[in-house]
Image 1 (cartoon, rainbow, N blue to C red):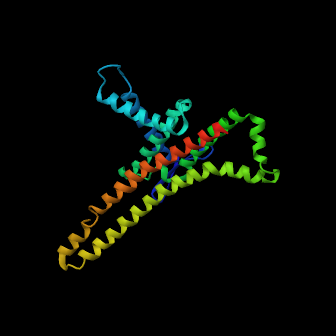
Image 2: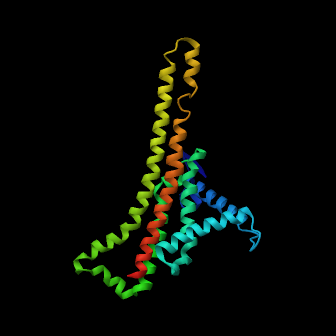
Length: 248
């Protein structure tokens, strides 16, 4: 096993597996998935019908919230997809919030989100074939005329790709903006207190006074609010497209 450091990311290469690259993003994604699975296993054990605990009440509220989104956007018949939608939202939020711990969020890498998009594409295609039948589904690519087939295929393929890039772009932009603000405040801090002569100026110049407060406000928006909004939008688009496919 060899270790290559590229910037802030570490790539582990395992020759015995044909040179597969295992990135920090992959490790962090699996670690977060394991943590969420353990939390969910703890939160859903010892469920009761009466005299429920606060833990069970919180879990039921979360499930009812996601279930309400599904039934509102797709109808009662699609309640079976509630676990899938809930998994997408929880994965998106937890991976975006990992930036609060100093990690580069997995949702800031396009391949992570693209994997979700591929999963969505498979479910969407299966739904269309099940609803329309294989023949009519394939024939739909020839509408309105057969020469439109390549464009219809591209439109179908690029739908999950565009959703993935949209989610990825919003998360990555937040990381970039926050990093730039941190760097600017650090430079301004050194320049401002560097005007003070002597040891006092040198001491204050290394204390990140200007980095207190402003980054916290940015984190509240880009990490918490924006992360939750992107998870909600991605899940809503998944529900909307699958719901439409079942009615075609």
